[in-house]
Length: 330
Ligand code: ADP
Ligand code: NA
Image (cartoon, rainbow, N blue to C red; front, side):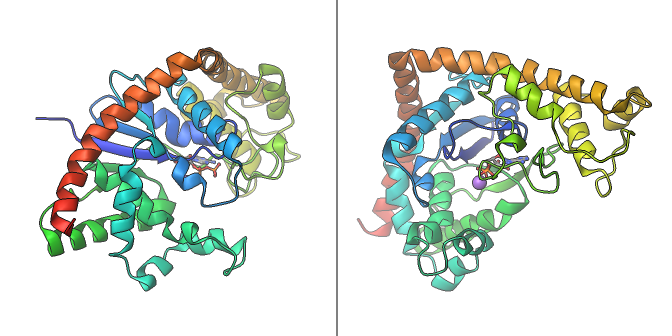
């Protein structure tokens, strides 16, 4: 039997992925190569739902793809591509938009959160239809599984509803995707504000660890991570969110369970512990940064990898769209 197909998209909205993206998404992508027919998509079309600069978008899409390869995605085993290279995404999105109710789209809580930043009337329509483009991404490839965190469950439900609606009205066409709940991925928080999620939209650069940063600045940020005034290394989310975050990071990077770390650092103070966290971060990031730099230095080779990924993706997408067009009356 063929391996189940998995699809995931990641936005190129910053110049580098950060530790949260790495642990929460990229590293999972790499491990899902085993046992899944994996499609990974740098979703540049999603990135234009908020303000952006064309040159920056083009650069960031390439850097994002290079980081995915550098982190261990093997183009022989996974299909890695840039969303806009496969035109079928926008075509299917339009057809699905026409099947979506205003009320249904309006219930998406992520739109409510994101549009609040702009004010309801100046948020773009693209931001409103974002989950429908996401549905197109998934359905085009007939994905069986979609890795989802809590904030994406609602979008996957919409995707399933749209697939069922299309199938019901026009004939069986789309596979209904199931959520793939990723285990062992916990939210990494901001080093300067350990109650907020580490995010590229963070206001304090000292709070995020970028995959492409040099060891010096990475170490400095870890050593300056906000903790409490105590000395004990204990996992206490409520009273010691900074230490809890560092324990999560160290556990995820070294594969050591948190209780074992607590025992190991008992009575040692924060300095020693932070030094080890900094070491684990730089040891993980450095080879990925170096491979990313190498990939970006040979533009023609990267173009070729991306063209090959897009061709593989397009073959599947085109097959789906042929059915869709035929059934939907085109
Ligand atoms: P950001 O918040 O930086 O904009 P995205 O929302 O684009 O990140 O998330 C891209 C992927 O990275 C998603 O799969 C998301 O779950 C994961 N991710 C982002 N931030 C974190 C974090 N702080 N901890 C764990 N996973 C994260
Ligand atoms: Na996201």
